[in-house]
Image 1 (cartoon, rainbow, N blue to C red):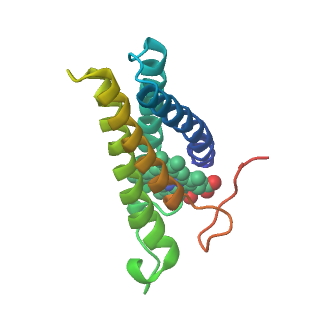
Image 2 (image 1 turned 30 degrees about the horizontal axis):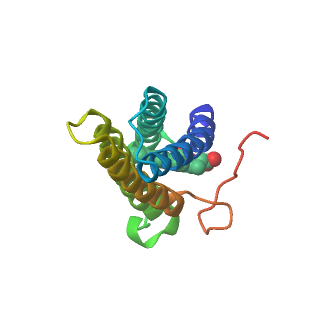
Amino acid sequence: MNILVALHSWLRWILLILLLVSIVNSLSGFSGKKALSAGDKKIWLFTMITAHITLLIGLILLFFGHYGITKGVPEGLSVMKDATYRFYWVEHPVMMIIAIALITVGRGQAKKSIPDVTKYKKAFWFFLLALLVILAAIPWPFREIGRPLFPGM
Ligand code: HEM
């Protein structure tokens, strides 16, 4: 399970980098009124795939990890009153699933029959919103439920 936690955590960096590149390329696409390029489409696709892999590992951790639902909660503890359980069972999964849905919808713009500049513009807003949600839902080390930035190093 530790290896999956580390993988899930490291994937955060790949996803953040890809999402940032997607935000920059969609902004430059719509401000420069460019035609949607194959390269930009590929970056959006990789961003979505990375998000979906992170989601898949996240779901495994949610059910079978350290705080896995299948393990239950310690005697006398209330999930919503305990900061760690509330975060890993509710806040983190719900916010991340919303963010991944936003990325998926953002990437889906590439396949729509709308002008390329509109694709870039809509994708930009979906990706930007997803980034903000992800940044808010990551267990950064300074938070109460904080985790390492680079596990294993
Ligand atoms: C954008 C997507 C996501 C990112 C960037 C992300 C990031 C992280 C990070 C950095 C950790 C801390 C890992 C550590 O302890 O070193 C973590 C833990 C965790 N995440 Fe995510 N996560 C994402 C999506 C999800 C989703 C969708 C779920 C559930 C459906 C999920 C469930 C969990 C669980 C259960 C843990 C605690 C793991 C454990 O200690 O056993 N994550 N996540």
